[in-house]
Length: 257
Image: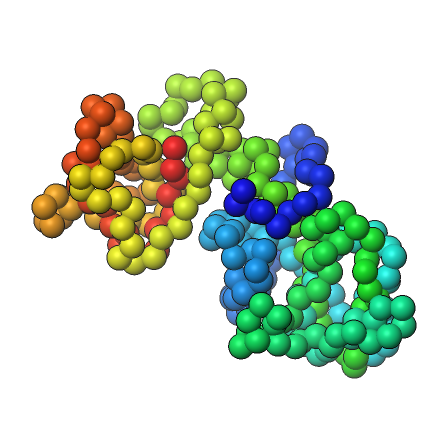
């Protein structure tokens, strides 16, 4: 699965649940986005999912010696250190100081803690205390798990309104929209990335969620697709090879169906 590291029971969301949205300065959003993208279990998140996670994070400040989490307690938040240091202690013995080099990639600085209790629904494995004054960003358990486990509820929350705005789907019943959302796959592309090539077999069609893409036939641009446009449907309807190559122009986010 896309989130193969998540082994805990799936989280059930209450009806009409929406993630918190905490106002932030642009530099704070940039900092948190960069930090989350370095974390191994979040690297497969889409740009939209990362945006939701960053938006839900709230700031907390602790003074020297303050206990942030306590070993054995139930985990209710995940943390990123912005300023200062924290020490992780297991049975009163120091095992780690954060920030520190990441074990997955020592060239990357690790600034997060508290994820294991949320990922695996286990008690806190260690206590964490502030060393000097510390500024943290906290992400609540529900938002953390809902995005990482990729439930159908989250897909409906993220994409239902957008799908209903597409002319092709405007006459669908809500139950049909929900079923469509459950089946879609969100994908991100960078400038110049190829979504598919002319002559490829067609196994899906795509809706542009944000950005632009160029459609090329025999190497010549024949059209540009924008937000809300869809492409790739002809190969499915006609059961023919792809009639054109589609390539991202700048950052592109699509929904694959």
